[in-house]
Length: 334
Image (cartoon, rainbow, N blue to C red; front, side, top):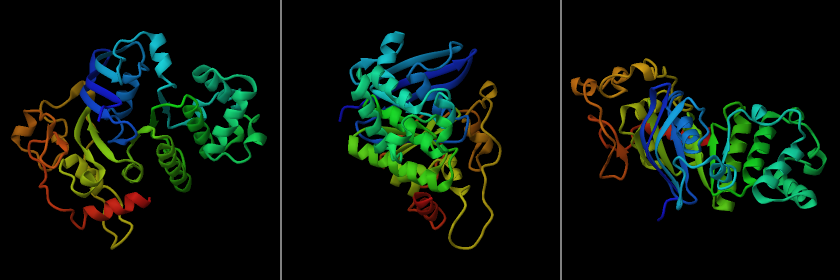
């Protein structure tokens, strides 16, 4: 199958400090891909760099292709045709993404004019259809309201509607449920899954919430310190995580069933990009690290079970244990 998006050797540096170290990533048409990891691992930067949305102080290299279109170093006019059109992005704080002094109907119509050339009555009719599609109650009555007159969950739905205005091939959701309560999070996740199925639209879901990723994604990439350390089908990674960092993310999840036991956090923090360890970036926090890990950095290699893994001493590829399997079940329903 031809990939919708191909990213090869993507590197980013801010003021000379590298923060992405050669990302290789594919997105297939219609699939849901998850990017997980702690804050500061490079999940959002990857896609901001791919779409040319980083500030001028950022140095970006590598190749980004959208179908037959090469976005690497593309002029601004070409990128603006892609952004919001073929690729749309929604952000984690909808209240700051919407213009507070413009009515939501006007903002939706502006997106429709920019990406599809609709104006006047056809634009309003399509805006109302999009509001109804994403579950905004009484679209006609709320078309002329301002963003502050909507709840946080409804603002996120409006952002999704604006993203859909250009009928994109790919929707990038950058932690879209972070600021929402658990009930609204579940509604937004269900909405994204339904829209992807109905529109055959590929989705990249950026999150640190493993439960959300399990609910909406088919394939997962685990990022750490600006690199992908493990990737594969969601069932494979969630049932049998082999990278110690991936397993650490599961061990830190609270259990909803069984006896209460202390959480097992990953000790330490993500390293400062200005002072990365010499070898594996995760080695200082890894209970399985050996001398080799502190001196040599492992590359990402394909494994026999289909996953890709960057670890010199991975965990055994054993069936899911009683500790791992419940974490996945809890995540799916969280």
